Each structure stands twice: as structure tokens, then as C-alpha cells.
Length: 482
Image (tube, rainbow, N blue to C red; front, side, top):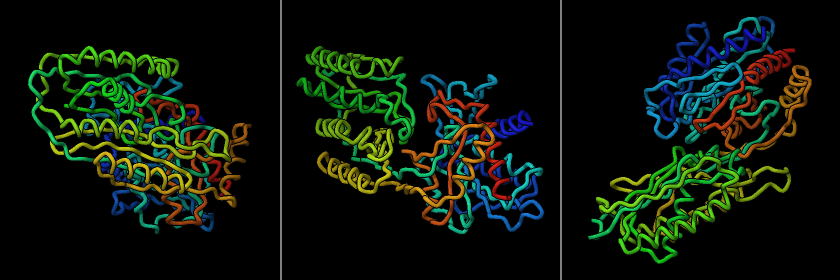
């Protein structure tokens, strides 16, 4: 029976991998889920945000039991290895199943949170289960803004909610950090490159990257901040430059794995710039050689000048701001050992014909520190001639000391595996924070199978953990129905 359960969940997941679903573009997967519900004879609704809500009636005789809501998000972080041709708007995920792990060929897998959707679909589709009324909510744009903040509260008027967007088996999340998507911007004041200059390009590639919440304390190098630091070293050496391009990062909530800076420099200063970069790399290696096993740092010099460059002041202000912008761990919790309390991550940068923009995603489980990071960002933006906007605020989710769902789930896991669950808060955004604002009385947890290196092309999903998580969900439903 266990193999049948796993096969059924994997089958549901494989269908999802054929449907492009980057953040802000969930229309196809939403239609798939809507049609799935209709095919299975279930009540389904698509709300004003494009989210899918599916209701399944209770097993006969259990209609009076509490309503249990299962929730997962439809979008995924779409990233690929350098050199891989991948259009997240049209291309399916090429899944590799070796019998132990699911991975993808050159791209992110999308088990975050496709495997959560698949588990919920299994529960909705199995008519042999004994349960009270069930609702499944499949949300949009969790990875890049958490649009469920704007969900109509009527969909959340239940008793229990199980969020299936968790990444470690044997762990149950009971609280999460809030977050703010800060965007620094400035007009791009392009001008012709000075006569006689040469073009230098510096780039990082093959850094580890990772999730900017749960991975922020692993010591991984941030490609964009590292490049800004390299440019600051060049400036410190007395070399004048003007930036022609600065690009990198793939998502605001992912630690950047790669990036490049293209800039104009006088021929007489090229050797001085190279020497400054040598000194920078000596320090970088001391800091990261034992952490980043496969990174590359490249320096290229071309005789031709760039087509256009930013003004010297804008170039300097951009590097200054990116060097001092809050990035990495800000504070650690004084109450929970090893828990990051607040942090921020410089995630992406783009320069186009009109403007310069880079994103910094700040997280905190304590309002004071969130406010402080916001004040720091605002002050730095003003000092460097940039404007700052907060695109999205993601609310946090406080511990519920009177939770019934936590002990129910822990007991079910103990019976299923013989092991104790670890109950823990997380330094990452979970949609339970948005739901807590809509229904403060909603008893919530987050659980899921082990996922490794999410938001990267190295993402992996443990198949045995998928089976255990699905059986745990079924056991929790049955305990609620008792």
C-alpha cells in the first residue's frame, strides 16, 4: 500500500512538472487544478487572485468534525545552470527519478511546492480515507510577493490548516519570520564612454547560492555583493571607472550564484585594477575556499570601449550602496539556539535603458529588527541618491501555545515512524503568516518531505520522505476525525 501511495503522489507531481508555473504566471497550472477538481466531482472555485479552492465533503458520518485546510502554492522559482537553454514560460521540467531522489536536468525541480500540491491532490482523490470536511487552497505568487496576503478571509474560516510547504521530514514548523521586499532604484544616466578607454569584465559563477531564509546562515557567498566588493577594492586602489553593465541573480529570495560587472577603465589603470582584484581574491579565498567548492572568478580585458556607460557618480554611488546594503545575518535569536532572528539578502540587479534596480529581501521574526533594517535601507538609499520602495510586506506567524494540531501531528508521526518530531520556528516566509492575519484562531502547522537546495538547479526531493509525509497527513486526518 505504501508503494501505491508514493506512486500516486509522484504521478500527480510529474503532471505538474509539464506545466510552466513561474511566479506571476500560474494561469496554466490553475486551470489544470480546476479541471482536475471537476473531473473528480469536487466543488471548486477560482478566486479573484487566481487561486484555486477545492472542497471535499466529509466521509459519511463525519460531517460534524472540524474543517481541515490543506495549502500549497502553485508557483515555483525557475532557475537553471549557466549555459542551459530554459524558458520558464514554455518549457517543462525534465525530471530524473533514480528511485531515491527526484532531481531535474539543469533546472530547479519545483518540488517547492509542487510536491505539496501533489500530496494534497492525493488526499482529495482518495475516497477510502476517513475524514471530516476538507478544503485545499492552492495559492499564487508565494515565491515573489506572497499574494495570499490579499486572500478573502472567508476561505480561511476553518479549524485546522496544514501548510505543505516545508522542507524537512521529522520537523514541524509552528512559527515563521515576516519579510519585506525592498527595491532600490535610480535613473540610469547613460553617456558615451570616454575616448580611449578599455572594457573590463569581472564575473562570478558556480557559487552555491541557496534559499535566502533557511540558507542565509550557511556562509555562502553572494555573487552580487562580492562583485560590488571587488569594484570597491578597485576604487580604493585609486582607479576610476564607469559601469556599462551590472547583472546577476535570478530571484529576490535566492542567494545569487552568479553575476558580472562590465566597466570602462583607462588603459593606464588596467594593471592597477588587476592588482586590486588579485588582493580582493586573496581575501575572498581566505573567506570562502572551504565553503564554495566550485566557484569561478574571471577577469577579462578588451581593447574596445563599451557602447555606453553610466556617469562616474552613478557608478560610484551604485557600488557604494551595494557594498554597504544589509546582506546576510543581522541578528540571532537569544531564545532559540541556532535560529536566525533577522537577515537580509541582495538578490537581483538589473540595469536597462531607463533605470537601475536591485532587490534586497529582509526577513525578521521580531518587528523591531524588521523596522530597523527598513530604516537602515532608507537612510542608505538617500545617502547614495537612490529611492527605496517596499514592494511587499510578508507578515510573520507567532507560536500558538494552545495548538491542538501540533500534538496531534507529533503523536501521529511517533506512531508512524517511532521517532519524535522536532517542533521549530523557521527563518523564512511561510504563508501561514498571511493566514494568521485573516483568521487569528486558525490552528496551523507546516510539514513536508525533505527538499535539498531549493531555488537552485541542484534541488532534490527525497522519495521515501514523500511517502512518510503523505501517510502522516492521512493519519492526522484520521485522528482529527476520531
